[in-house]
Image (tube, rainbow, N blue to C red; front, top):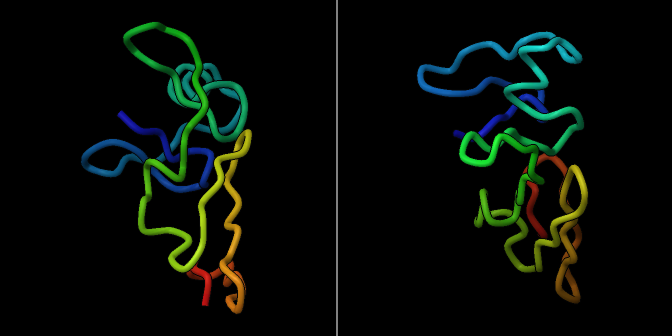
Length: 88
């Protein structure tokens, strides 16, 4: 299961509203920090790898996972568009 709470959206199927940030349910589902999820196999929080999760991000560049987020390093001649998460 992937938690999108850190992105301020929803999770699961069908998309269920995320619990309030900081609540016990939120921490159990999403981890205690943005960009984390609770791994049900290990019962530990793990970093979400946005680059691996959304491989179409950062076209014309390289997606670099960072704690709680990601960064697009665009190829020469391209600029990052934060609305589309693409190098254009």
